[in-house]
Image 1 (cartoon, one colour):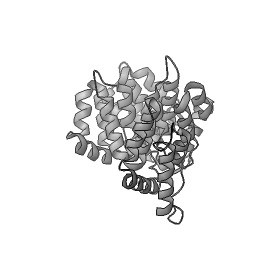
Image 2 (cartoon, helix red, strand yellow):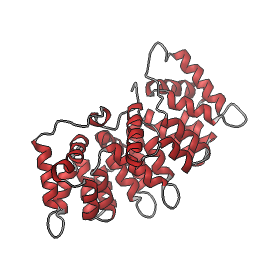
Image 3 (cartoon, helix red, strand yellow):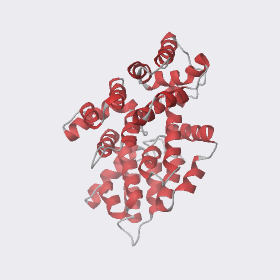
Image 4 (cartoon, one colour):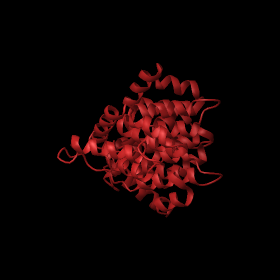
Length: 327
């Protein structure tokens, strides 16, 4: 890959505030209104109308209030409860706004949810990051970088702030040569294993600015020269949340589908399921879920559908399965 994968649909990345709305979107908006009408909610009908592909549900989110005079997220918040309600709220707004709301949730309240935070911010394309920063400011009235600095400290703050800049280079074969890969492999080594103490900021900058195709070249050179991969080197030199964040960012550049599959499995590991991490991963990564499903089955010998069904129940299960079906 010459650049990191865009997770947002074109309708979000283009900033189109008045997309073409066809009869399908009108019908879905009417179905949502009907599902919430009267005493009690028709959850099955609501799920069918809202758990669509990214572009369709973005248009529905943009069109519902102009058509029916009610904010769709507020409507869903009133009609749905629990984990199911949280998942539906993520579907009721465009993907960039959903992630802005998740970041807000991760940084407010009792303690910071570092894992949710770094899985949203790290390993993103420049286009995605620019859209996310705009959505965060528009939705919450604050600069995303300032928010991170106020809520996170230490090396994790430095790495997240570096990622937020959205400064990944575009791959250029005349610039990103084998000679440069050898130089940067050595620079990674000198910043980590080859020095007393780790130059974290040097690692953060190289990782954030390197496009995937070039980073793969650097990783190959590093492995040949030092007999370990960059993954192994970073595990040795870093620790805590910043180690997890750096490895996640590296994974999203070098093996994104396997990285997301592992994240989903992690949300289901141990005693009890991390429902917020599970739902946000299924919904946020919908654009690449077909490849993630393949990677998940190859890695764990189990379909993603089966994992979701084994970890969730009732309407929460239904909405996540519907997202998988419409990926």
